Image (cartoon, rainbow, N blue to C red):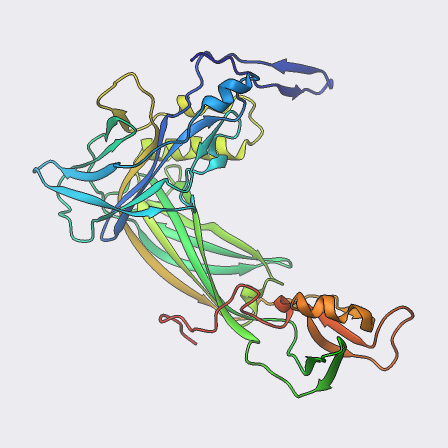
Length: 409
C-alpha cells in the first residue's frame, strides 16, 4: 500500500524568511520490526521487540482502520555462537515499559515505535557464556527470520573515578574512564541511583470523622514512621561517549548526571551505580544518530530511521527493512556515594490549604490531613492547614521504607 507522507518543516534564517521543506516518501514502513537488544556477557541480556507505525497516516480513514496491531504470538529469540552453541531467549510475557534506547519518541519526526501490551521482552542467560567466540542474535517474528552481524565481546573500560561536583545551583556526577586493553575510543554509559530522603512534614494531628459528617481534630504528638524513605530510579537512557580526540586513552570527568542542590537526593545519602561498556565505532554512530533523531535538535535534516545503519538483517526477505541495533559487550560497574554536603534547602515548605470546616470531608477523602494550626487564621481561611499525602508520607512520594541490601551509612 503506497502512502504519500509529508512533513511541513520551517527554516528561519537571519532575514526571517520562511521556506517549507516537504520531502516525499512513497512507502510508509508500517509493520516494520524494531529491535532493542543488549547482549552482555556476565549479565542477563535483554531483547525487546516492537513495530513501527506512521504518525501521519493517510487522510483516508479506511486506511487507518485497516492497520492492525502486531501479533508477536509464537515469536522466538535466541543467541548463536560460531562454535554451534545456542542460547534461547525466554519471554516474560506482556510488558508496558519501553525502557532502553529505542522508544516511541525515537522517530517522532515521521514514525513512532509501537509497543503495545503484547510486545514481548526476551531474556537470554549470558552470565557464563564463553568470551572468546563470535555471536549473533536471531529472531523469528511476524512471519520472518532476522539475524544480526557476527560480533565478539571486547573487554570493558575501567571506571577509574566517579566525582561529585557542585556549583551554586546543581550537583554534577562526573565519570572518568580508562579505555582498557580493547579500547576503541568509544564507550557506552548508563546508571541507576538510590537515595534516602524525607518528606516536608511530620504529622502531629489526628483527624477523626464523626457519624454526623463533621470531624474532630486533636493533637496527638509526632508520627515520624513515614518521614524517611529510600527511593531508587533506573536511568534507561544510555550515553554514548567518544574519547578518540582525547590525548589519553580514556575520558576525564565526563558529566553523566545532574540534579539541583535542592533536590531530595541531597537530603541525607545518595548513591549512583555507573555501568560502562566498550562499543565499536559503528555502534557509537548508530546510537548518536538515534539520539539526534530522538531529540530533534536544531538540525532540520536529521536522519530518518530508514537512513540509520543497523546491524540487523531480514534473512527470509533481504529487501525488508528492520530497525534497531544489537549491542554486544562486556560491562563493568562502579558505585559512588554522596552525603548531604551539597544540600541547599528550599525556601519554603509545601503550600498548605487552610480549609474551612465545610471542605474537610472532600480533602480528607482525597488523602489530605492536618499538618499545621494557627490561632489567627486569615479572612476566608480556617485554622488548620491541610496537605496531601506526598508531603507527610514518604511512600506516597514514591519511596519505600525497606532499606536496600547494598545500602551503606
